[in-house]
Image 1 (cartoon, rainbow, N blue to C red):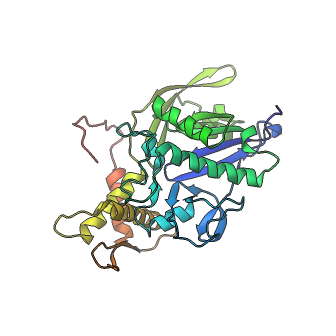
Image 2 (image 1 turned 60 degrees about the horizontal axis):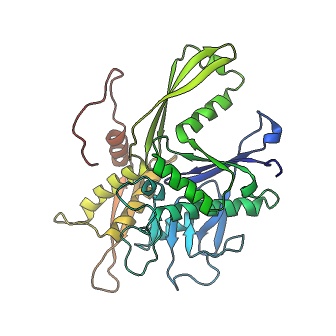
Image 3 (image 1 turned 180 degrees about the horizontal axis):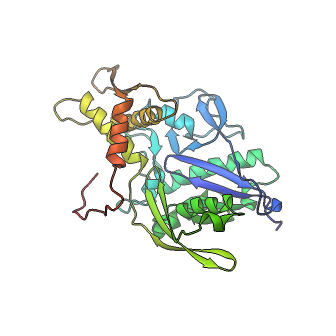
Length: 357
């Protein structure tokens, strides 16, 4: 078999997927390039974007006109990945598969069973977390092959990142998803280590100086569904710094998804009275709207306010919408003070009974 033409890195994220690549023939200083991922943005509208949102939309039988979901490589999927899925899923409750990666490490469910979209109404064809992850990877693979027909991904060296705190079951299910997507030569790399590898690559010519007087490096990775901590020990050797991973933090199901849910809960308190709760379909829609508000109000530049709306439920055919708005200041307080509160340098973790978030 011929040597791979590229080394391809895939970040199979909870909220977004990304692809980057390098040409090994160019040696250690080969530049790393981002791969723009073609995907549907709106019906019949395809664009190559830096990220593939990690969402699948399960379209109804006659929901979209013929040809509206066709991709550049000729496929017209019923389960649509990416920007269109996120956009349409915020408008049509109960058909959006989100956070499949978080479900991969959820020991309380059968991760190989068709359980997503969670809370979907009867008649919606469900998928398992493994199958959802496989379909995201399959989209990335098809997009790469379309752009590189002479260097198809199955013959390249592929690296897929996973949380450092993924257990063996979650890692094995990720391998299964990659195999279902048609990937053949691939390896798994822990995400905090991948981040540190990037640091060492950027300082490949002055790494000893960059790590002078440093003996421990803490890598913190706050993702969409998990937060990872990795501790790396820096030693001294004649060849330069000797690096060794010595500890990994506990598995923390805490990330951007929780921030979205916290904002959604604030909105729910404003939109419904008497302590009532939204249905599962409404809640899914509200979380997507909260995510849009978070990304908008914490972006650069950021508006002062962001309106969110959710379809109302009732016996009438057209029940209208429920809407409210967030101000930038209150989102900053909810996210920054709520999830990243200030603490003193000498502070230590408080030991207390675990409570639900």
